[in-house]
Length: 625
Image 1 (cartoon, rainbow, N blue to C red):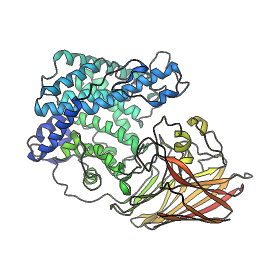
Image 2 (cartoon, rainbow, N blue to C red):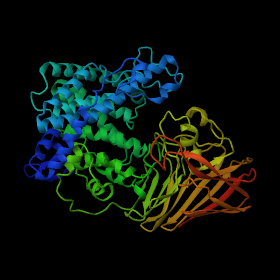
Image 3 (tube, rainbow, N blue to C red):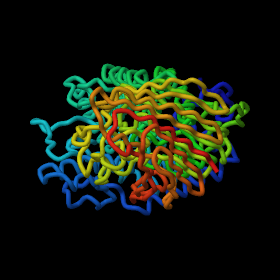
Image 4 (cartoon, helix red, strand yellow):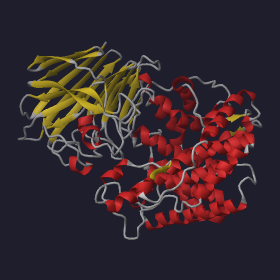
C-alpha cells in the first residue's frame, strides 16, 4: 500500500516509514523543489512576526495572546462559563501551535537561522506550563452542565494537537538544538499526559470511553496524544501505555467501514482522520505498521473524493461547516497530501492533480511535489452507494459543468447527524439547485431550529409546529419531527454513469407515521422525486415538504389545487399531488451558498396539504435549464 520510489533516497524506500525530518532532508536533493522549500521558509518568517501563543487563566483574558473564545460560553451560567471557555481556548491554542511549530522547525532545519530557533524554544517553553495540556471543562457546553465532583472530565482534543506539535517539533529540530533543560521539562509534561490518558481509560472517565465510542474524534485525539507521547519518550519505557494507545487506534480504524466510510460526514471525518493518519505515520516511522495496514485508511481517500460535487462544492450532510460552499473541495488539499505521502493513495494523488489543483502549504504539500508523475490516471468512479454511510453519491462527469446528485438515508451508527433522512441534493455546474441549510458555528442561535432540524432539509414534516431558538433536546420532542439516529435504508434500483433510481424508506423516522417512501429517479437533465406518505390509522394532520433552492431570488409560483409550477432562471419544478396542496415561498438562512458565519438567506419552497389528511402522494419534477 505504500509507494516505493528512489526520488527521496535509495530505491525501494517506503515514504510512509520515513520521518518528517528524513523526508525534509531528502527534498534538499531535488533542485525543482527549491521554490517550494522557500515558501515554507517565507511562511515561517510570517509566523515569527506574531506573538507566541500563551495560555490564559481568566475568562476576561481570552482574546489576549492569540487565544480564542468559543461563543457558546456566552449562554452559560457564570459558574461554568469560565471553565468551559478556558478548556476550549486550550483546544484553539493547540490547533495553532500544531500548525505553526512544524513550519518553524522545518524552516530552522533548512536554513539554520537563529530567529526560528529562538521562536521555537520560546513557544515550547511556554507549552511546558500547559499541564494538563487539556484543562477540564470541555463537557460544560450547555446550560446546567457541571464538572464531576473530582473536577475532571478527561483528556480531549487539545491533548492530541498539543502532543502532535511537540512531537513534530522534536522530530524536525536538528540534534542538540533543544537545550537539555527544556527537553527535560517537555518530557515531564508528556509523562504526566501518559499517566492521565491511561487513567481516563482505566476509570472510563470521559463519556466516549464509558460509552465505548471509538468513532468520535474525542476518542481519537487523546489517543494520538498517548501514542505520540510514548514514541517520544521511548516505547520500551512505556510499553503498556503504548499498546493501549495502539489498541485504541486500531479500534477506531476498525469502527468505520472498510470501504472508507466515516459516520460523521466529511467535516468531522477530515479532522478525525488527520489525527488517525498522524498516528499511523508516527508509528510507521518507528517501525510499527499496524495502523497503516488497516483497509479503512487505504479506502478513505476514495470515499472522500466521492464527496466532490460540481462547482467545487462538497457533499455537506452532517455537521460539515462550510463544506457545501463553492471552493470547499480545495480545502481538502491538506488531508489529500497527507494521504499521498503516508499511504501512496492513487485516489488522493488523482484528486490532487485533477480536482484540487494545488498542494497544501505545509510539509505534506511540499513532499507531494517531489513525488514521481502519476502514471495511473484512472479516475474514481462517478457514483457510489455507501451502505454504512447510507448515501448515494453521483455526478455525470468529473468536468466542472457536471450535474451532481446525492441522496441521504440513515444508519444506526450516524453521529453529528441532522434530521435529514430522505434529503436529496442537486447541483448543475456552478449552480446549486436543491440544497440543504448546512452547518454554522455551534453558538449560532438558529443552529437547532433552522439548520440541524428538518426545517433545514428537503424532507417531510408532519404538522405545522416548527422549533424556535431551542436546544436539541427540546426540538426533538416536537410532534411530527424526525427522531435522531433513526435508520432509513436506501434501496438502489439502478446506478450508473447515466443516472440513478433509488428508494429511501424513512417510515421509522417519525412518530405517528406508517409510511414515508421517497423514490428518486434522475439523469443529467431531469430529476424526479415521488413521496408516498401514510400516517398511522385514525390520524390526520398537515403533511408538509420543503424544497431549499440554491437561489436568493424570488421565484415564480403558479397553479392551484393538485398542480403547481415553480420557475426561476436555473430550473423549473413541477409539483403534482393526489390531494389539494398549497405552495408558498419563504426566506431561510443557510451556510451552504456562501462561506462565512453570516446567515445568508435563500429561497425555500414550502409544499403542504391544503387540509389535514391521512395520506399524500406528491411528485416533484425538476427540469434543469
